[in-house]
Length: 165
Picture 1 (cartoon, rainbow, N blue to C red):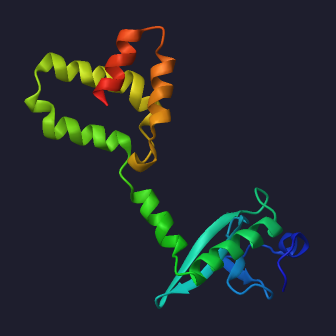
Picture 2 (cartoon, rainbow, N blue to C red):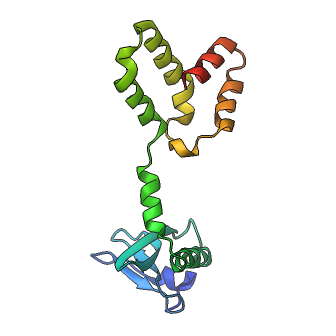
Picture 3 (cartoon, one colour):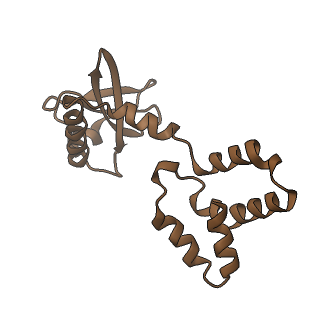
């Protein structure tokens, strides 16, 4: 069956989750959960392993948007990529907050107590709220400048925050 708004609206939940696959685009489907939630998925094989990528929930994206996203995923696979693995690696990337934690575990004891407390205060108050959740690789000079500009009213704190990074 071709996955469209009309066909998805007809699908009802069962006692176990199940999937319905599109006839036109191999690997594109919709998963229906036991609670009735409908999620677009794309399934593919890469190096003999069956993988899948969630494309989005029905309602948040339309079937056509999901189909286009599935084409991009399948195109990436055809060119040698592995979108599921890339998402997994992105989730596992070291976040800035974890790096700060590791810094204080490794080097905190080497610092004088007042220096350590100053770094900790500056990072906790000014830097971690805005950068803590980001993977280290995604933090740019622009992000650091934004922190510095936001603290323009307190130049000492602004400079200390940047220097503690």
